Amino acid sequence: MVFEHGHQHYYVVWETSCPAKAFLLEWWADYARESEPSMARHYIEPQLKRIDDTHHRYTAIIGPVGNASQIHYRATSYSMSTKHYSISRRSEAELTQVLVISDNQNGPTEFRNILSSIRRHYGSHSTPDLILHVGDSVQNVRKLNDWQKQFFSPLEDGGGYHHSSPLVFVPGNHDHDKARTSRNGNVYADMYHGIDATEDLGKPLVANGTYHRFYHTTSLGSARCIVLDAECPSAEQSEFLQRELQSEAFQAAHFRIVAIHIPPYIEFWDPYTWNHKNEKRWGEHIRLEYDALFRKYRVDVVISGHQHNYMRATVPRKGSATDTGSITYAIVGGAGGTLDLVRVENWHMYNVTYLDHHFVSLEIKNNQLRWLAKNTAGSIIDQFSIAR
Image 1 (cartoon, rainbow, N blue to C red):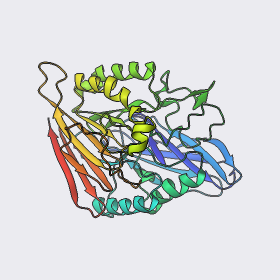
Image 2: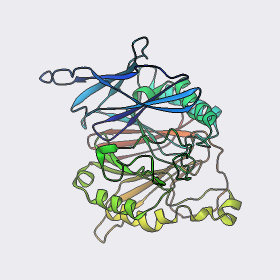
Image 3: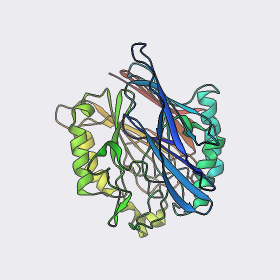
Image 4: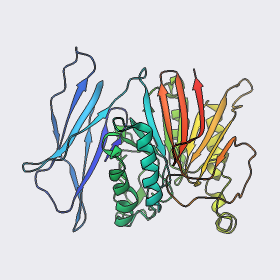
């Protein structure tokens, strides 16, 4: 599986049932311009983590990749190699297709149905350029069977997009293990360790009892996307958010996107846990603190999961007295988990509500953004466009 790891790097993870000797990650690049020669082959020694007797995990980071138009990689040793996979890197002027999914946890059958619909959407000879997963990939991060049954196996059987379409991973409440110890058991959630060598994200997954941070910024074609961690609000994340929202790269982007697992405005949930287990408080800091910043700094789209259905609101942003733009809040929590069908709040803002499983194709090309939501049958349930 390959994850985006900032604009210039990719994070690759693979696993064997027994330890293999002399494993290396081999990668090389192609360039669109003839003036730039193809890059020589690189061999990276991976990090090995023994999970148990039959799970040995390897990780390695590809990059920096420069202006490469395509990246190729494979895991190899003296005696065996995996198939080689290719990652396409689009320019801002080219069409970038982003598959947006969320909340497949504990619903592998429905997840497989959604993946079948996704394969029909993209066709047999095309794949999304990126996958934006907005959280809750598994029910329990400590259970290896959940990872295999609910995430890895459906992805493999559903087209294997995770080999060539880098995942932008937004942590959900089920993707977290908040034990905050070196034995926390969350063995697949360190894809942003060391990203860009920043002070925050350069820390290990767990150091001195402190859980590592997921928040970071990446590019989706001509859009900039800020990824936030809804589960672990902190002064550091708030400072990061303000800094990134004001940055030249974010403000100069054609489109400004925020991805965070818990939506600012939830309407459907289990009434008992919402009212009696205080789950209505989970996302308060997002609505009360972050959303004012989203509007002030002209965010175009806020993408969330958590609520297991589809909702979309496009409303006036009103970040300032002179702001005439709009902001769209989209909830895309329908990749397989048990649906939320009972209304617990009404914010009187959502334009579209769809109470069934679905996925979204986000298409970005230069100054055009198109959002296309489809159900399991492949029918369009919602769409909108933004032009700049």
